[in-house]
Length: 195
Image: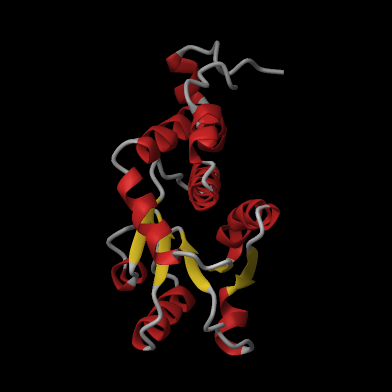
């Protein structure tokens, strides 16, 4: 096994991009955690306020973003929330958007056609929703009642750092909703030894 931490900067630079992205995950997660404890805390509060006292939460996304929400839906279910993850395309074309659920739309770019269309439909219906995205200037985010930016470095090619950053951001949202944010923060602070 290669100890990528011990590699010199020159050797890391010569590694394929995907290996560098994997290597930089722990550093990127520290950046995300620090953001959510600092400047991003206001976005967590706004997102929590949009969800309010709703015990029913629907996460809607496509592809990897859909999978990023699954751990948070499971986490929230442990605390009595009716939380589920829906495929945004299925929600658009085959399901009815629940009127009694808090809605969280997740998209790395915030520009995916289905996510923008879903955001427009919710916005036109006067339904408040949260946008979780790496691109807070995207149309999906601009239409949202609250935007929870996914901080950290973007990937070129395969989504590695952005995926794990989205998972951590969504878990912070879940912890905020259950009153466990302080416990989660203590788990994510100063993890410099994680490889």
